[in-house]
Image (cartoon, rainbow, N blue to C red; front, side):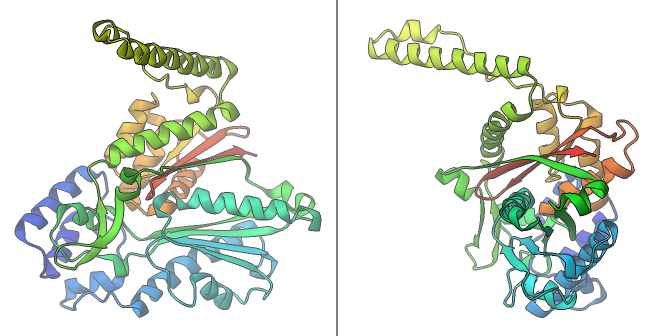
Length: 393
C-alpha cells in the first residue's frame, strides 16, 4: 500500500475529518515508511467500495495467514518438523481470541498434545525479547531432560485495531503499524542442533517503568466519543529515553569492554557525589553555591566496541534518529532499522527480526561475520525497554 492508497483508505472509512486526514498525511510523509507496506485485506477492501470488516472472523484470517506462513518458513529453515517442537510461545498484543493463537497453530500443524504453550498479550512492541527470555528459561528447565526445542512467534494483528475517531493521540496508530510477523526456533539440544545453529543467545535484559507516566504513555482506551484505540502520550520520548538508559546500564557489565565499564562507574560516582553535595548545600541554605555546582551528564558507553550490529525497533524515523544520536552510532549501524521501516513499516514486535534478516542477507556496508555480536533493542507499552544480544555462529 502506498501513502496515497492509505489516505484513500482512511477517507473511505467516512469517519475522519479533513483535519485528521491532513494530520495522517503529514505523519506519513515524516514516518520513514515506504510505498509498498502491507495492510490486511479486511481493511483494504474499503478501496473497492466495501466497508472495512473488523470482525473476529476476519481478524482470525489475518492471524492465520501471517502466523502460519512464518511458522512454516521457520520450521523449514530449521530443518525440524512441528512434531519436534516442545514449547510454543506466541506474542500478540492487541488480539487475544479464544481459543488462543497457540491453539490455532497446534491444530493447523498437528503438533504433539504435550507441547507447552504460552500466549503473551498486552506486552506491546517490546514483546519479542520477552518471548525469547521465556523460551530460554523454559529450555533451561528442560536441561535435565536432554534439552528441547521452542518455537517463538511474534506478530501484531491490525484488522480489529483501526481507530475510527479524530483525536490526534489515537490517530497515530493508524499511520504507524503494518502487517507482519516472525517465527524463530530455539534449541538447547546440543548434540542434535548445535552444529546447525545460526546464533547463540548471550543475554536478555528487561526493564519496565513503574510510574504513572510509564504506565499511561501507550494506553488502550476509548476516546471521548467511545471509539476504541491506543493513545500515545506526548511524554513517550522522555519515558523511552529513561527506560533505555536503565536497560543499557544493566546490560553494560555483560557486554561492554572493561575500559567502558570503568567510565560508566566513574560517571555514576561523580553524579552521586554531586547530588549528595547539592542536597547538603540546600539544607544549609547555601543556594548560591549549590547553583554553581557543575552538571555531570550520564556517560553514554560506547557499545560499538563490543557490539557489531544493532537491530533497533522500527517504531518510526524519529525513534531511530534519537537512538542513533544518543548511542553515537554510525549510519551503517541503523541501516537495517531504516530499511525495515521503509520496506515493511512498523510491524511491532517482529520488526527486530526483519532487521536481523536484513543484516544477514542484504547489508553490504557492514557484512555479518562469524563471531559478530548483534544487539536487538525493543520498546513497548508499560513502559518497557528490552534488549537481547546474540552471537553469530
